[in-house]
Amino acid sequence: MNEPMNDSRPVDPSALPPREFGAGPPSAFAPPTPWRRRWQIVGWVLAALLALLMTLVAWLAVTAPLALLFGFGGAMASRSRIAPLRWFGKIYTAMVRGV
Image 1: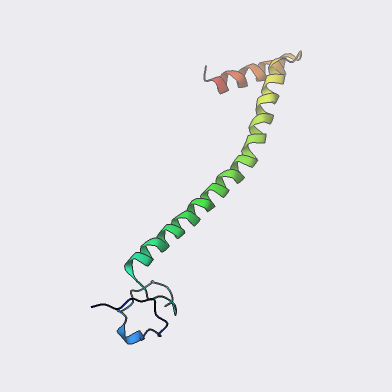
Image 2: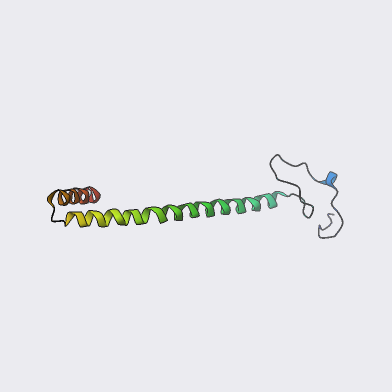
């Protein structure tokens, strides 16, 4: 019968299964088990998703003000009294609307 692993005896390294390549450093507190590796992957995936979210927010912080500037600039140009500027504004508005 298997003994519980919650006792304070040290783990004999020769009794552990062979380690796979890239499994990380061995732990002195818990032997490597398949379920532990599986749950470590969840942490890695969450870290990657957080990095992607931070990248998305950074891109949004740059592009949203630029889009507002272009939009307001095109709207003001299409209302201008200067004919070439008004033409440019009307063409820009038509291109953005997809007409």
